[in-house]
Image (tube, rainbow, N blue to C red; front, side, top):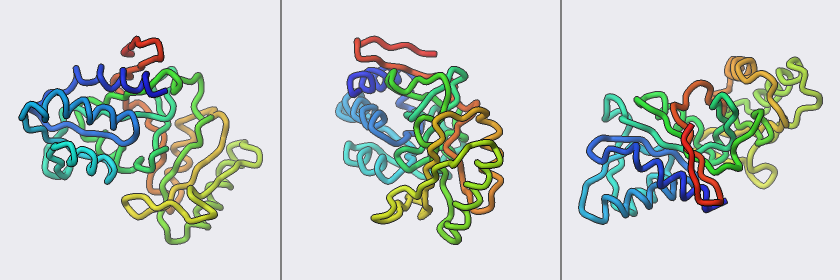
Length: 229
């Protein structure tokens, strides 16, 4: 729903201070935000500096005249704005559909405020219909996949479907040179239990559950309205 994404991206501009360094997430909704920033500031000659969460975001932002620096070059980000694949009633998220969940979580963890921009199709009563991504190291990846499947069985998920992203044509490789497993769960009964179980598996780098991280959710809809929760 392109319209809702554009509206949410435009609304999030209210939270950007162009004189401070902020963080940019990854994905189609953030791409709209980058274009908004270009129109509002860069095209008028103002210098904008940000930290990026992926090569995709970096390439677009630099092409539109923004300065992209490394996270280690700044003490703390003023705000990070990113999209999400699902948002539950407690503002917990599934993220990582764009393959950048590790960098997104690192950057979001070093900001004063983490703001999520979505269209209304991403609002759900329970997380899990969107496949849960987890980033894993490439060494021993089949063993890690097996460990994930065993954990899901212990948690009561019957015949869980766990796939390497990109397989069988070729496993998707993240910017950090890791693989991604997509967990098709339909519903996640206990997000904290799921996160703790998965992150405890040797070989798992990060999990696409963002729990208690979002300060605000900006939701745009196809009717042209927007709300902040």
